[in-house]
Length: 145
Image (cartoon, rainbow, N blue to C red):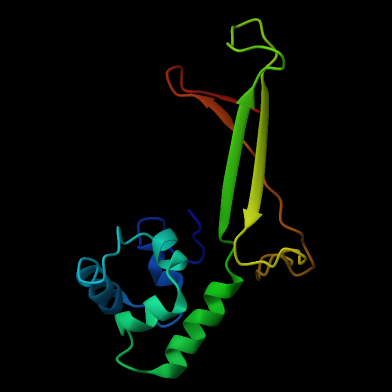
């Protein structure tokens, strides 16, 4: 989940421009009518701008809709593909060398473009993003890194 500038118990939709608790409630009430599967931030970001406009969250205020769309285009919306395999083996055993491959795609960044720098008041200098992958064993509550 992507959250910034909020207490962790607050709705992540509130980090978007012009979204307040009343607007979020209005969005949640319209889920069934507009056939939206859930009220998560991820689902909201993956709606097309036309689908978001049909929700009429800002009662026709085009300036607010434009601000919202501009902010959404800057958010790091990603898709992740993963592959776990052992070379030359059909089954995995405890003794095998297991390979993990991850492909991360920025959904809002063109194929020939690259993502920009982190934009935050906490980084007063240019900073590239980075990704860290944690492997966990839920049954043992153990993290491997």
